[in-house]
Amino acid sequence: MIRRYLIAAATAAATLAAAPAQADGLTDMTEAEREAFRTEVRAYLLENPEVIFEAIQILEQRRMEAAAMADVELVRANQEALFNDGYSFVGGNPEGDVTIVEFLDYRCGYCKRAHPHVQELLKRDTNVRYVIKEFPILGPESISAARVAMAALELDPAKYAALHDELMTYKGNMTEQVALRMAGTLGYDIGAIKEAAADPSIEEKIALNYQLAETLGINGTPSFIVGTEIIRGYLPVEDLLGAVQDARSATN
Image (cartoon, rainbow, N blue to C red; front, top):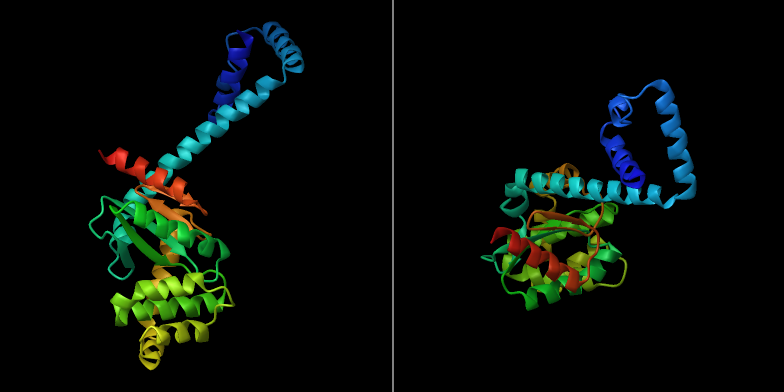
């Protein structure tokens, strides 16, 4: 009995910290009864310290559930900017029933590690819509590479997927010159890309991605939105497939 009380009291205390008298459950006791009860509780905890860990686990589970629900609301409130901004690349199946949005940086090692898993996901589930959000956060060279990629998308969307793959699989130091050379190899006019990349509209679009990421609590790459779930970090393909199935089930 006391075990159940302690776990319940400990978890309730986290949400009722502003009202400690109510949280401790002792308001109907005399001072002597309170003191006796507290002495008993102390003795019980010393004999059964695992109760504290049980309460912590319950608190953490509730915190995670609350955070997940908050993420769902964030995604719903920003769904147009996430899924239909009009300037981000849309691949996979554009008519797919589940959308994955990836925030990425071409200089990010974990993004490069995630890339083959994302490609495998798109092969194995042909009903996934895939949106790329350029999110260059690892310095000026990241921004330059993102500018080149976004300019290439504007100039010739049909070649963008191949350029994206080249940028993601490149194992050397990613610079603007490297990105331009890759674009040229794929048939882009390098002069036209330079001109388009320098246009203020590209900078404005990157700024919008920064702003959206901040709103969503995303500060690292890769980060994914799968349906209404925000996944901050790298996931292997099986976990991505599981997240897609969860999203699909939630809408059926």
